Length: 421
Image (cartoon, rainbow, N blue to C red):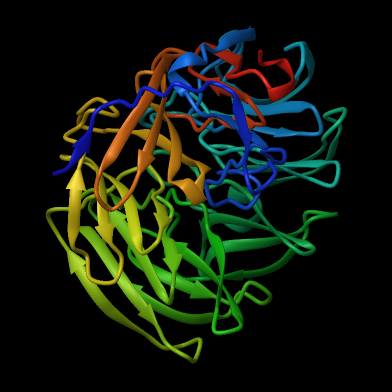
């Protein structure tokens, strides 16, 4: 393992990045790939002390935070009404509650029953949600007024997994895609975005906990769905199957988002390790490129990729750098970036990918800036922002909005160039 000590820079002014940032309107950011890319970043992160802008009291939940057009969205389980779930919308600048919308949700004996798991997906003035017990809703993003709602369990025979539905809604043209494992062949339901009516259902697996993703391979789009028994590829327009690869998982914990690059699809699970599939020229062609059962076992944290290297949180060794082409492990952080635990977690995003700059919110609620490369990692700064959390924060320009089971907090992370001395 190679590890560099924390860097101390002499220059503290800001430099522009090559890409501009946007809102954080969906799970893992604007493109769903964990890229932040603010317009400016500090040269010396250790000299930039975060400033808390506001905080608000909320209920429990694991769902991530999203931000669109100056509004912050999340789902929770209110303390005053534990038999329900709700969507909350706050003003990004002030933290003022703009609206809330709730519905009944009896968790029964569901494990980890503190609140919803999915992020709110926002597009074109509408907010799409999926509750832990299967209630799907479309709301006016500005007011919270319901446009439609569908109980996927009663309407489509969706099967609630052990820990509740966790996959965030994915938008694809006129459709909203929901990973709910409906009987008899409905790993994914495609509902009309305007009406909530069923367009198609496809895939044979029960529901896992992983948000589906649409990839582009050999000029064709494929919807990748990871469930407790298979990795599947569906046509995102029709729901018909291209291929499926067997990968039966103990307790059905298919959670972390797969990573696709350069014709290879990497999927990593807690109990049975990593499978990397090579996709063929035709959409129905797939084969195993390599696998590793013991030494790289992901859980909840979605991996990052740069220059042939996958950065993956392993359940035993912490963050690892892995050659995508052959599975060679280059280094691990020995659990220094997030605590070693039975269920280790960090939300890892690229701060500026071209320079290998990343940021992570770890399970203790610490924001850690790191520089990643094939040679090792360099911790640049660390700041305590919130209490213990597994939820993915939202990054918007020089701000982060993060949540725990009790509060939602917004921080300004650094000054802009115009404000710097």
